[in-house]
Image 1 (cartoon, rainbow, N blue to C red):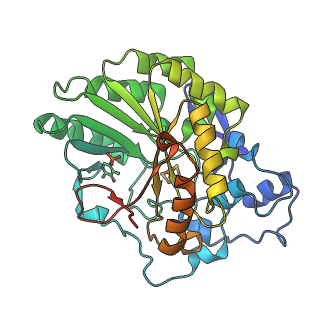
Image 2: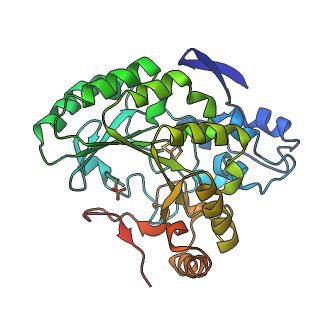
Length: 329
Ligand SMILES: *Cc1c(COP(=O)(O)O)cnc(C)c1O
Ligand code: SF4
């Protein structure tokens, strides 16, 4: 574990070495072999608050499996490619993605609080770290010129990787766009690194005239604990709409019991289940695949158990479509 990275005047701690994590969890490299090759391109990075929720001595822990680099990641599997969403072709220019009507996706940083092994951006051709940020003012000008855009989606990476001062600068720039009504923030920070939701950060959000929607990414109820519940409540009290998207992942949440427990935990924390994504076929993630056949069975079971508002929409992304595509039966 090494302390690094200063944001909002807080020093954060991450695990960046799988062996140190194993030691902390009372596991050996024989029980949990990791791939050094897998972390060459896509680094190992796990914040403390997330590690605290992993059950020690449990190789199958659903949180551990999301972040642990295994040898399957470096195996090439037919159909699993580097850019299955064809995002390179949807880029208006570096850092700006516009696929759907009325919404522009602004990539402001390649950095995340946590590196999820199934990430669909793990091979994204991000250049140097500051590159996206340097592009931002220019991208905002393009959004200003397009009157059809009423919602900006901040994504990345994770937009909360930006320092408070940069985040404030960003919101200030966005507020100069008269036709912009909503700001959506896609982030895992409130859950995996809840201390990021400082009073200073909350004040920046509170000062904004934009309607703010935060889309979290939580795959398992075990990711929620007393620490991040406090941060989530602060966001809720700030009148921020909280939604959640999950990815359906083999060995992590691929059964109706786990997904029902997740939905209930979300609702208990003022978060509305939004999407349940079919995994994108990104190179290195094939071992997380849940087949369509299984996905449909799981989803039908889930549907028969939950109140309608607790049921996320099961969707996949198909390049060239005008929206996420519902998976139907
Ligand atoms: C998923 C996505 C959105 C948001 O879609 P919603 O269905 O509104 O959540 C917007 N832009 C891009 C490029 C996306 O991939
Ligand atoms: S937080 Fe999101 S963008 Fe970042 S590594 Fe995880 S899945 Fe990818």
